[in-house]
Image 1 (cartoon, rainbow, N blue to C red):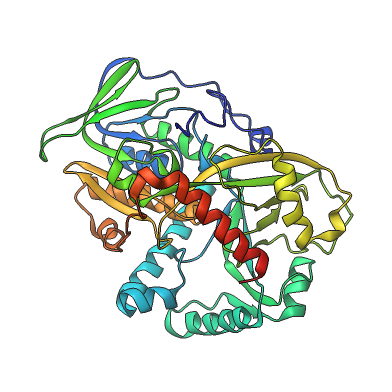
Image 2: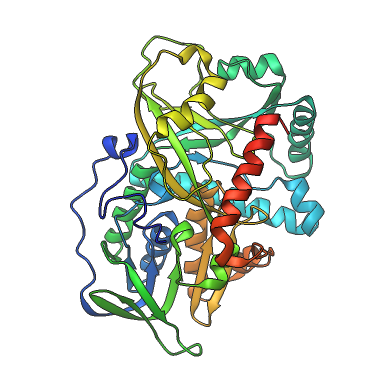
Length: 436
């Protein structure tokens, strides 16, 4: 089963609002024949393009190899939320790794956010401020209040405002939640526009990008100092370093990473512009996400179109009726939109890890990998690319700090990924419906 081809036509973007709003440039030519580079980057999403950009700006020759199109995967399909810190909250990090490590990881997460905002500005892609986190129970509201205070006291971060039930309802235009918080230091962006912008910046810096070039194999160097070969159907590139930036589309390129990083699907719908109707919905144009395991997340774009993601399926094949999967989740938050038609519905494949922290690894002496962002990838994947570029240049402190966070293999590894997906999504979908 090849997720690069299971749900999408070759070379075609999904029928997303993003693709309709950000017409991509003409397809870049595939890799053909022999090529030579200092670094070969596999994957043209946030991770790969950020790596290529930062490597090229350091003067290295970079070849990016993309099986489909720039931003074809999760980078061009996601909810566009630029979250603070790491995917796991700092109290979890403190309990698992100690306060000093938790602080270092928090600071890296904040670097990720700042870097993403800076690159978006450079690429001319606007970023809006604010993400609300919607809690389903009083216990979760109490925890959110505690974390806002904890971040202000111990992490010098005072941008999270705790909200009671009425405060959150006013921020969201929904009474579905018990309360939560509003992080004014977080933000949201049109993700495909940002990905295409990163590609332009990388090419302007000298990186070469080949689309329609699925990697069929990698011959890793036996030891550092000798080159590797990355092969496609029509050519190959010999490089001193290889960067794996494939996330949920890694496939069989590295089985050890694949055992730790599980692809899952998620689905998004978008309304037509709401105009002056429903002014109560996100009046300050913030984004939002809730505390379900299969997270609901949403935002309004600049034309007041509601972009809403959520819903689980226990298979890797997209459902025929994506709208039918997502609409009940949307209406559980905004029942007032029952009669509003949905203009776009699309699916995408992201990747998670056992502990929801990204998997940074060195699969071979001259190979680096980062993946498994677990829904926190807009900023963290962008930082991961820069950290891998720095590691290639001999400055690996940031990469090593992320790689030191243990990421266990899923039970059964990659071989049992499909049945694990079925069991896991059924279980966690049931927990969400029961309110756990």
